[in-house]
Length: 507
Image 1 (cartoon, helix red, strand yellow):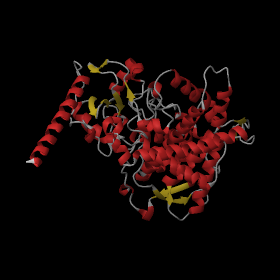
Image 2 (spheres, helix red, strand yellow):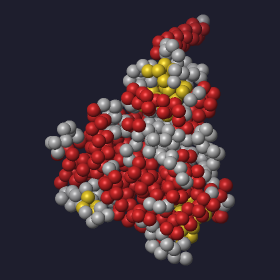
Image 3 (cartoon, rainbow, N blue to C red):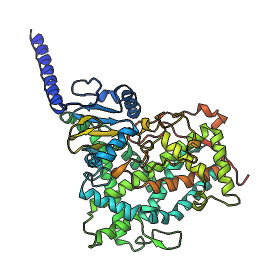
Image 4 (cartoon, one colour):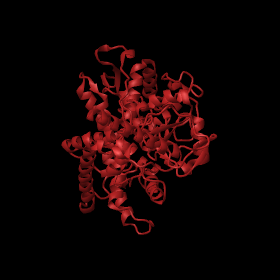
């Protein structure tokens, strides 16, 4: 009898919780004309439909429910945008309303309560930090000043591959190391010991992986305790603490060591240029700037530079070489262009790249098929608004799914095929003006580091195909290369990219 009463009590409690959830959901979704929505589960809403690879799962749902689709992720109403026209409608007409960021437990823990540029709320603080990035850290002049660093590190990479022959080359590891060394020199003025760099890269990998997690507390706050039980909260604390210690050490070195101030590198004109940390310290001291940059803001900006600079460049190169290895004709065509433009030189330099149209087409096509962040960083509406005839409530999370947008057959012929030729003679670019190609985001919240990432990627790719011929290990057929993606905010290959290099220049 007691067991029967206990069972009834449990059932009654479940019904009451469901009714409470249903009431709250209905009270927040009473717009006159909301976007189409898939059926929802109690409490979880549509969370269970995200799957291991959310950009693909959301594409499948959008094919059934439309380019503007409303999901309920726990208690978060989430608008999923899956077409170029829908993105254009939002950005051209309502961008200010959709320029905020939703609250993120992970961003708060790792990035000093959202004091960086990527996750900061839209407002005066964000505008100030963005201006520092655009005008001080990532301006065209400053990015060009890092040319010597990029060329030196690329040459070192080529030498390292040459020494490793005939061993199989782990290109994934090679790209991560190269990108981190370039960013390290640009940000801190020097490279650190191999042990320090190794520890830093492990920490950075954990940092990027955490940004791709889905904390239960973000979506169902009363279940936040699950993040403690599954270890996520502990990981966040550990990574945040260890990163903070490293960044404090670097700031102290720049503040107290005369050898690190203003001596980070020389520009291509031989002028001494300051590294990122030097620039941030100068901004902090400059009373004419009109706003203050505290220590936490500097550390948050540095983390942005490292995470974005390292991860975006290495991921782009990893997918570019993967596609070239799968498409030997495209690889040969790129090699012919690079070798023709660079004939007689030991390496390809950035001046040589300017007229390499096929190289630029390969980069664009790689970004089209493999955007580093297929689900662009989420936005949040600040007030009620009508989009394409649909009512969107205030505080609705907005997810732009670049993956289906960039494979839309309306814009792209044979959209799933790797065809760099489609960009030859095309004016379509990835800087946010063409809504069918938005790998770096769009509008005010687009990535300010496009030039930094592309400059490095083009140089590395050109030198890889200039100095070496490439094939898969054990002479495997090109079509057998596994292209399975990893899960996370930024999408890498699930498995490392391995290849065999044969010297071309010194054969």
